[in-house]
Image (cartoon, rainbow, N blue to C red; front, side, top):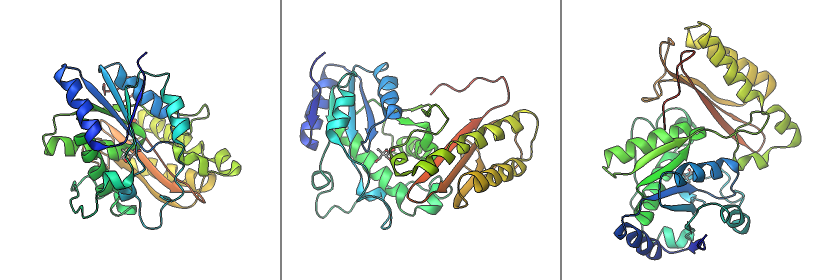
Amino acid sequence: MPEMQLITTVAAMQNLADFWRAQQQRICLVPTMGYLHEGHLSLVRHGAARAQRMVVSIFVNPLQFGPHEDFAVYPRDLERDLALLRPLAVDAVFHPSAEEFYRPGACTTVDVGGLTEGLCGAFRPGHFRGVTTVVTKLFTAVRPHQAVFGQKDYQQCAVIRQMTRDLNLGIDIAVAPTVREADGLAMSSRNVYLSPEERRRAPAIYQSLLAAESALQRGETAVQVVLDAVRGRLESEVSPRIDYVAGVDPDTLQPVARFAGQLVVAVALRMDRARLIDNLVVRPRGSAAEPA
Ligand code: PAF
């Protein structure tokens, strides 16, 4: 297997991407903030099967963290990340410094309206502006044909899809399923913040989503009834500090009152140091999942 390159400047990344494009090679990007886990590796496998060249970006993006959020302590371990990626079909890791990526005097950001207002957007002001700005910059550095994101960040996927469409970026946005620990907890770099006691309680998040799915599939149509049950369980079994428990349309992310077709049940809550999110796309029983 050819050696995986570590690229730290935008110019070098663009040169390599141009070289591959000149050879008609399809480039896939998996954007990450590092501290990789099996969820990230599954995105790489998902993308590698659909492209000739695979780039993983590792950049802890200061712009998407609020002033009181965990930017300073976000877990970082580049050597460990590179060791995890080396056995996979990764051609390049793009790892710019914050100074390289955000030049002094930069004053352009990318804003997506509508979809960014509810769910996490309501609790993390400016977060999605940071995400869409950095993803646009990653797209212009790596020049991918396709990018892969994880379904755990459902709203992020919807926002990036919208942005890609609105700006005619011509990049396929693929969404890969959430990867879970054996007990159902969605994998996240932030799970390292959980105390042993919090870690023991956290799987009830997924259990409550599965219970919601089963109630809806058994014929409950009043979405609020199902959400109230999820909220009650989260409050008593996981944490009373709930940001939201929502049932939204998969495309518009607008609240849905009656379950008739597809519904995303999404939750966000806070433990002591970690903010955990998860979601499930509920479809009528027996119907197949949409391809990503
Ligand atoms: O999902 C993430 O890890 C980040 O939001 C992303 C897409 C890498 C942008 O910084």
